[in-house]
Every structure is written in C-alpha cells, then in structure tokens.
Image (cartoon, rainbow, N blue to C red; front, side, top):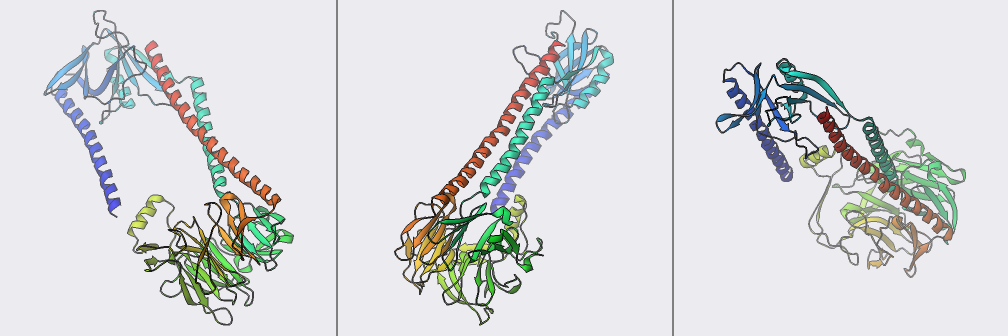
Length: 573
C-alpha cells in the first residue's frame, strides 16, 4: 500500500509541475494580450510565434517553447510585440504595402507540420526582413502551434497585404509508398513474432510420464505422445492433435492401449484408446461448461481400480476431489483448518492409502478412507522442512483475477485475505539443497521406498529425495545437469523422470540409484528434431522482432526526410 501511495504521489507531483508550466505560459499570453489591447491604437492582436529562416539549417524551429509574442496588425503596418520586464518591446516591424503574404498548408501522412504564414518583404531597404526569412503561426493557449487559428489569422490579415494565396505542400508520392511499406513490414513482423514466440514458448520436451504394471512407459511432449517398452525401446508415436488433446497436465496408464489424460485447458479427463487413435472425455465432462469448470487450472489424478474411483488434486481451488469412473464428483474437501494449499502430485501407496504432495504447505499428507474409498480424512503429515515450521496462510480465490495488470495490482493491495502468504524462515530438509522445500510429486516403489520430487518457490531447480518406508533417512539422488525435472513415475525396477529443457528422459535404478538416459537412438533422433523445431521457432521470433525495429527506423528516417522536403518546397515557392 505504501509503495502505491508513493507512486501516486510522484505522479501527482509530475502532473502539478507540468500543469504549473502550462498555466504560466497561458498566464503570460493573457497578460501580454491585455497590455497590447490597452494601447488603444485601433490595431488588432493575436498570439503568435515566428522564426527566421536560416539557410545553414535544414529544419524550421517552430517546436520550441519561447516567450509570448503578439502580432499587432492594421491597414498601415504590422509589428510583433514582446514583453521585456514591465515594458512592451517591438521586435519586428512589417510594412503592409511592401510585403507579400502566403499561407502554406503542409499535407503529410507521416509527420504533422503546422500551417505557416510567410511574410516576404519587397522593400529593398529593409535588410532585416529579407525574402522568405520569416514564418509565422498562431498559438493556442499553451503556446503550441494552432493550424486552424493560423488559417483564421490569415483570413483576417489578408486584406492588409499583397497575398499569394494558399499553397498546399504535399508529401512526395514515393515517400508515402515507402511509409506504407514500413508500416506493413512492422505489422507483419509483430504478427509473426507473436505467433512464433507463443508457439516456441509452448514447445517443450517430455513433461509427463506414466508406467503400466507390465513396465511400459508413456511420455508426452508438446506435440506427441510416446510409448516405450520397459527397456526404453520406442514402440509408438501418437500426435496429440490427432487425439484431440490440447494441454496435458497429467496422464495415467491403464494398460498398453488405454490412457486417462488430464487436459487443463479444457478442464476435463479424457479416456484415450491408442489402438483407435481416439480420445473422448469421461461422460460427465462432455457437457462441462467453461464458465463453471470442475477444475481450475492444473490438476493431477490417480485411479483407484479397487473402488473404481479417481482421486484428483485441484491446485486452483486448493482441494481434493473424488470422482467415479464417469467423472461425476462424489466428494470434495480441503481438509480441516484450510489444510490443503496448492496440492500437486497424488498417488496410492502399496496398501491403497491416498498420499498427496501438499506443495505450499511444505509437506506430504496421507488420507484415510472408508471401505468404499470415500469419507476422506487427513491422516498423517510428513514435513519436508526442518523445524520450526513457518506460518503459512492459504485461502481459495473465489473470483477470477482481472486480466488487466493495473486492476490486479489494486486487487492485491485491497483484498482482505491474501491467497498465499509465508512468514518465517524456511529451512530445507537435509539432504535437500537450500530453497528446495516445496514437494511436487510423490511415488512409492515396490520395495516400499518413498520418492519425492521437491523444488523451490517457482517449482523448479528440483531435488529428488528417497525416504525409507517409514519416511526416515532421506537420500538425495545426484541427477545429471541442473535442468528442471518435470515429472516422475515408478516402474518395476526403475524410476523414470523427465527433463523437458533437455528433451530427455532419465532412469534411476531402484536398487543402486544409478542414473542413465532412458530411450533408444530412434527416440533421441525424434527429440533432436523437436528440439530443432523449437530452436527454429525462437530464431524466427528474434528475426521477426527486427522487422518492427527496422520499420520504426525507416519511419524515423522518412519523417526527417519528409520534413526537409516540405520545408524545402516552402522555401522555393
């Protein structure tokens, strides 16, 4: 709140200073007009500004703020008056009978020039007023050029002078063509940059992984679903576009031909029949309304085959859901005392008990159920941090936040309850490295060891920890590189993990914890192709960003050249 108040105060001070400057200009003009009108000489007055053409300069100087100047005009002569202290001083005297008058109206689609009145003296004795040397324009209340006021002034003083009339100064045709080309290049570059940048940002390597009881492994990239045998030999590749899947958030392998896939954009769970290359939403999701989706954002799930249930964590609403096999909601809970906070990974242990990675509460939770798998009750809590435990506050966001950044800023400042707040020092559980305190995924292998993927506040820079069956003696597995791990899944004798940034899968032996790449040469070649496709998109993105830049530079050069050409045409006229 204090930071916003300071910004608003700074903005107010800037507006006051700028407003004060404009007021001073307006006040000076008014005072000078009043003094000139009090001369009672029958002359008329108008606030103007003027400049003398200097042949050494290519551009006029009509954009500068200066002292208030008044043009006093009548039948016999005209002059310019300026205030010097408390006195009114004559700066320029014009002989009406020996002066020609021309009104120039520049027309340009690139740069807006003010309408100018040129005075040309035909008096050979008037050395201070050489031909084509003075250009006038009427000013508004704030001292800036006013083209309409200039035209009105010309109409009033035209009877007093020899006039050459009105002359249009048009933009050169070839300049106009180049302007349109620069604009087209800039717009096309922006469109291509937005398209290629968004596609490149969504392009990634393997993010999700799932295993079957027979040892088959499934993984998904941004465009394809891959199937392997237990040894890493690739069996099949499926296009997600053909399957009708947009954005995966989780997948579960029922058998070698059937998967359940969670699509976070559509907010549904789909059953995929791979031998038919077809995915259909579970019956209850077929009429899912975008205005009232069951899931909000990312969600994970696990299938309880014994009770024909699906357990799902909904990170957006901080809750745990129980669904039947058709996707109908049977039970929903956040636990007691706002227990869940951004829950993520979910699994069933070897005894069928539900286990959840309660990420932003920095712990793993187990849940007890009745014989039908319902009546969820928090059972055991395993901290992923050292004591003392910090204070954590987590509340559900009942209404969607505005997409306008400024509105979101004010919402964040004036909301009574923050969605997430962490107070106090957070010490990572040894042997996890500093900052790795947020559990993301949890799995149990056939030897009853627990595997937990734990990351930092941004859910990356992950560590992989293995615990004993009773959650004691954690061991950190040394993983290759420093890239993020996206997902883990337990097989018969190995743990499979994904590293999307490297377009790689890795296998961790459940026996000796050795780590090695997973997948054959064919899969590696496919990943190289996908990685090259992403690299090409980023290259196109950066290259297309040059087009708007070149377009803007071109417009700037053309603007200067157009100004010089129009000014030269005025001088030659």
